[in-house]
Amino acid sequence: MKDSDRAQEFVAKSSKWLGWCDLYYQNMLEYGKVDRIEDVERTFVSVLLLLDSIHQSLVDAAKKLGALSWRDSLNELRETDPLLRYIWNARRSEAHDALVKWRPDMKHMEFQIVFPETARILQFGAPNQYEATRRLIFKAFGVSTEDEFFDKVKAGHFPSRADQLVAGIEMQSSHGTLSLDSFIIGSGNRAETIPAPEQHLGKMLPPSATEAIRLAIDFYRNMAIELQTFSP
Image 1 (cartoon, rainbow, N blue to C red):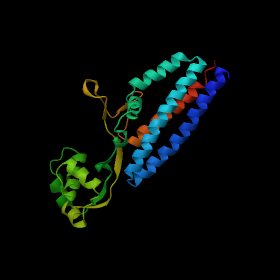
Image 2 (image 1 turned 30 degrees about the vertical axis):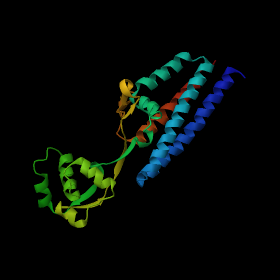
Image 3 (image 1 turned 60 degrees about the horizontal axis):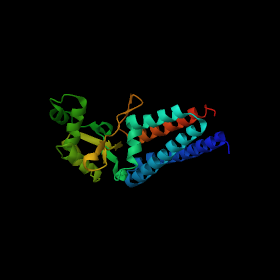
Image 4 (image 1 turned 180 degrees about the horizontal axis):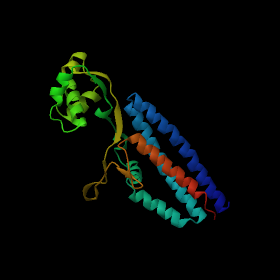
């Protein structure tokens, strides 16, 4: 078999696996909407493994095409880009099924102020809108720290109407975000912390696990398209 034909086989495999990644990404979105975190974790791990296989297929195709500089650049980018490096190492982490965390996001909590005077007293002196909102939400949930707040929300607690009115508000709904956590690879003197990625290809990365996965899929799809411009 010609090297060019073999290269096309590798590219075809990566395209098929990218299609699977698209399906898993949609599943992550749907599971996240209904807080099925275990399903999100399972799907996330599947995408990690697929992306690793896609990377290797593109590397193998590049070798067959003689695009060695392109291959080396791809490998280097995986080692240096915060998002790609995170995903590459995450599939080797023993804790890869616990990297996706559901985090309540107060910026997405919907409520209306029904007792303005009560709310004004609670918000007095707040340095910004986020802190002003946090004071009302914390009062309704009966907590004083973010850890207490996260624990209550993850446990399924939602303030009673009476507790909401104590804060001067009525809450319509609340939403959360799926974020990525840092993790450690290796042990002893060789232990290394891989931080949650904040950038990808020089651009700021939103603190969202699903957005990180989408960007990684898009990256490898673009690489597969780019590789097809080479000829042996």
